[in-house]
Length: 408
Image (cartoon, rainbow, N blue to C red; front, top):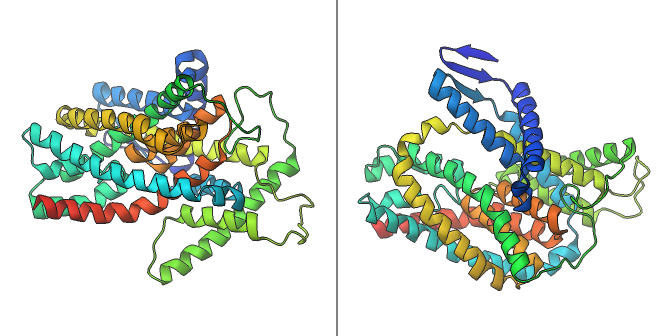
């Protein structure tokens, strides 16, 4: 940790440590403030937003900014998605074929609507229409990475000098909104339609709020860690091979596929050095998934530098407010009916709000909070990340280019 002028830089180890503390703060807040757990607000969101606001206050009154080194955060994301792959079975994948196609179709439709909403609100505010794209799929579905990557083109070709700041601000607002809409929408759908869970299986992420504490032994936890590392190695080699063919995927997607391969294609008769069964859908795997996702999201939210976007808040509040209303309407009246009007559809709707307004990890956190309260939904944890972290990245590049061509 180093203080340079008025900027406090927190190194990787301390950043992870603070992330764990922030996760504990969120867990404590959700217990102390029942409305947070009642509406399935993810615990890392409660803690992360609280700390982000505290750091904003420190910057405002003491002129000290805190910057976290977040390199280790990406490792946690790889861990989490590898557990999702390990928990996936070909039976779930086969059953998810039609829902996967349906979710992809409604997502592509929503992406068009999201851009039209951004452009429309920008026009009403007297802004350049291309600014609306920065408040559309460029920053929301695309996230911070896509916003940063496309900003220079908006500056050079369309004269939006502060495109980088607008894109980052929209992505930040979107991440916050995505973190808080999934739970309330799922709660509304579950209660409105009296939905029930059709499975008594264990959760993919974490332990149910209604279940008694689960006992874990040393071998179960060590075996789960070993399985995750084996799948990450497979995912790394897959990622290297795909990159040599000119195909670029996020490493966590390759590791997710590595987990799917090991769970479903490994020889059943092959003896394991641990002497145990492959740890798919075990409490140890669910615990590691919960810790890695929770710490990742806590670090993401606590590190938001809110003071850098406050000057853009006026116009962006209007764009983000419109995007929020459209997202909720779409989740309730399009996603839920199309996906089957059942409990699985409600969980998928909560995840849909996460990745279309924020990022795939946010979608997973939303669904984790919902399933902890109401019960498991294996299908959602398979098809949502495949759509949110795989298919729409390619689609978004094409849509952004078409939108820019349309706006001239």
